[in-house]
Amino acid sequence: EKSKGVCAIPLGCLEMHGQHLPVGTDILKASYILREASKREPVCIFPDFTFGDVQGHTRHRGGIRLTVELEQRLLTELCDEIARNGFKKILLVNSHGGNVPFLSNFIRSCSYSKKDYVVIFHRLKLASPYVLTDRLKENGREYFAELNDNDIEVLRDFTEKKKKFGHAGFAETAIMLGTYPELVRMDKIHAVDGLSRERTRHLMDVGIQSIKYGWAANYPNGYAGHAPEGYNERIGKATVRVMVEDLIKVLNIVKNDDEMLKWNDEFNNSWL
Image (tube, rainbow, N blue to C red; front, side, top):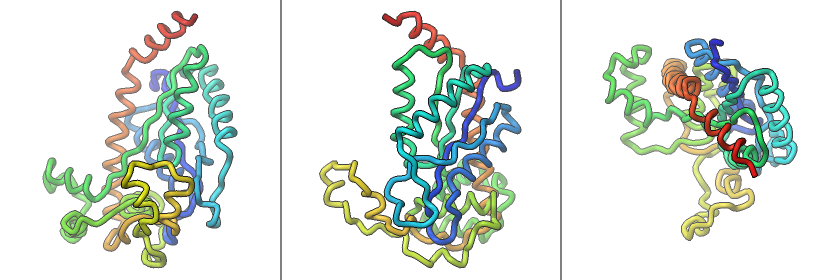
C-alpha cells in the first residue's frame, strides 16, 4: 500500500572503474541511492540486477559480460514475476550508461504483447561538480552545510577550469566516497590516465556514433575525465544527498501517476 504498487529494480554492471574505484561501482551506487530514497518515498525494492551490458571491457580483470539476449530474457521473466506478485508499475533505476541501449530495446519489446503492468526506466543523473555548483547558486551556501570553504573552492576550481568528468571521474568518485569510502583508493587517482585518446574523433565529427569498442578505444583505462583531486567524504555525502533528493522526486511522480496504467489498458483493449 505504501509503495502504491511500484517495484523498483536497481541496475548496474561489473566493470573496471580506473584503479581507484571498485568494479561494482555502478550497481553499488544505484542500490544505495535507491534504498536511501525509498526511506522517504517508499517503494518495493527488488534485488540488484548486477550484470548489465558491458561493452569493450573484456581486456580488464573484474569485468563480467553476459549476452544481451540472456539479460533481456532474464529481465522479461523477472518483470512478469514481479507483476504476478501484485506490482503493476516496475521502475528500472539504471546507473550504467552501457545499459541504456539494452533497456531502451527492452522497454520497446514490452509493447509486443499484452501485459497487465508497465515497465519504465530512469537513468540516475550524476551530481557532477557542475550540478553541485548550480545548486549552490540556486539555494545559497546553507544548502551545503556539510561542506567547508575549501570544499567549495574545489568545486569552483573544477567549473572555472572547465575540467572534464565521466566514467570513474569526479561524480562517481564522489558517490563512492559518500557511500562506501572504504572501497575508494584516492592514492590511485593518477595511476592511469583518464583523458580521451580521440581515436574515433574523425568518425564522430561526421555523425558516426555506434562503433564497436569505440568507447574503450578512446578510454582504454576504464577511466574518463580529469583526476578527482581534492575530493573527499564531505563532498561525497553532499553529492549523494543531491542524487537521493532528485530520485525521491522521480519516485513520487511514478507512484502518483495513474495515466500510464490507463494507457496500458487502452493499448491492451485495442489489440487487433
